[in-house]
Length: 81
Image (tube, rainbow, N blue to C red; front, side, top):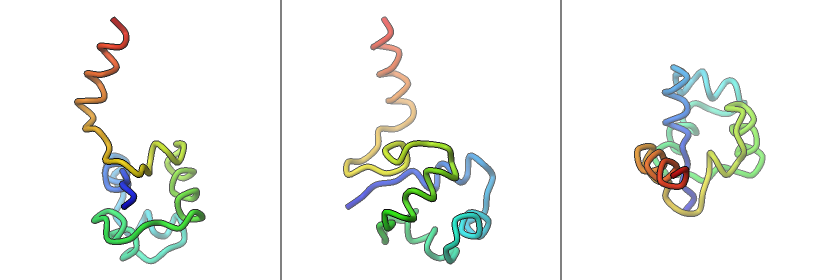
């Protein structure tokens, strides 16, 4: 399974599934399937989404579950000390 942050990134930008789908050239249902983990993005779609959000692919997709934002912030704080 490939994990992703598509829903988090989409809602952070205040986008509907349709708006994001239109921006990357897919059906809005594809975005829903991605967000639920029912579908893995093709490499082409992964690049389009990462480019749209201005992030690297590994910030949007991962073979391992992402840490929560709170956990990532706590880890960064510990690393800075």
